[in-house]
Structures are given as C-alpha cells and as structure tokens.
Length: 241
Image (cartoon, rainbow, N blue to C red; front, side, top):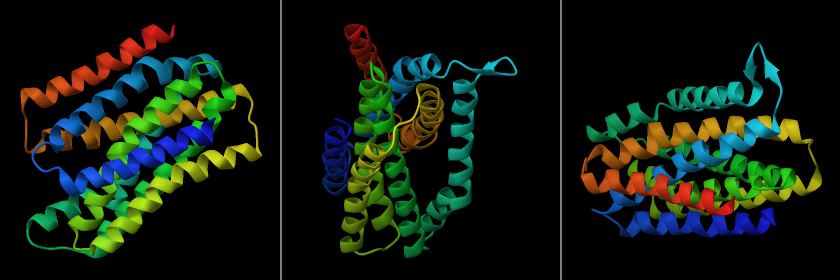
C-alpha cells in the first residue's frame, strides 16, 4: 500500500515540476494552498498520531514532541548550511552559480527519500497514521517538484538538468517506501520518527513554502488558500473519525 501511495507522490512531484514550467502569476495560490494543507496535516493529524504512538516521556516532555522540535531545528540548520537564501540574493544581483541550484535540488531529493521512508513506516503503524502521512507526502511533494525544477533552473542550469533532478525527486519517495518492505519497526520508534518528520514538514511549510507564496503576492487570495487548506484537512480528519 505504501508503495502505491508513493507512486501517487511520484505523479504529484512531476505535476509540480510541470506547473513550475507553466504557471507564472498564479503560483502564489498553489503554494499558499500547499502550505495550508501541510500545516493542517502536521498539526491536526500527524502530530496527534505520533504522540499516541510514541508514548514515552523524557524529563517531563513526550518523546514525539522533543523529536518534533528537533526535526524543525535540523531542517533549519540544513537550510542555513546550504545557504539557499544567500544564493538567491546573489541571483537577484545577476550572479548565478549552477552548482548552487543542483545542490539545493539534491537536498530536495534526499528529503523526498526520507518522505518515502516515513510513508512506509506510517503504514506499518496502521490505523489513521498511514492516511495522515500519505496526505502530507502527496500534498507537499507537489510543492517539492515545483521547487526542485525552479531551484535547478533559477541558477542557470539547462532545462535537461532541471528535468533530470525533477525525475530523481519524483522517484525518491517510491524508493524510500519500497525500502521499508525489508524491515519492520515497533510502534514507539515509528511514532518518534514521525514526530521528527512532522517537525521537518512544519519548517518547510512555515519557513519556505508560505513565505515564497507571499513574497511577491501578499494578497488576501493567497491567505484564503492557506486557510482553506487547513480547513480542508480538518474536514478530512473529522470525517475519518
């Protein structure tokens, strides 16, 4: 089942890359909606399930919450080390370094591989966990595909390289999900890992996707797409229960 869902993520990533080539003035609405969906999945479904699965506490704090914060911080540190923002500032001044775009895209591929592992792990837990992570992965893989193509081409790489990185990013969740067919983890470690994964997702939504959505179009319509995404996940969670 996890591999089948990962194939859906594969198609969504390709759809995101295709949209990056076609969409111009409406990309802020797409990213605003994607950010809202990710926020809703993390806060309303993924994190509660992770807290339930990983019940242990460390110094008075649930392990899943500690790893949630750790995931957020790790994503922030990785972004700082890659210096994507500084490189983007250089691009605005006419400086384009193709290697920067390839490095950023490679980081997206690595993240998508981790998405696939999280997806397989969630279906091992069973219950609503698999559905929650499937929603998160499929939703934000659209944005991943969008960003992978954009980052690669933004820094002067040829269209062929941008498409190659897009395909690698699309295939990564399938490879990650398939790898979990080789092993099975107990419920508590899986819940802990998914708490960490939720922190990474929240960082991507709050620090990358939503700011990009509002960067050039701080419009009410973008905000409404984000709110609508959160409300949509709330509805899905309510109907599932």
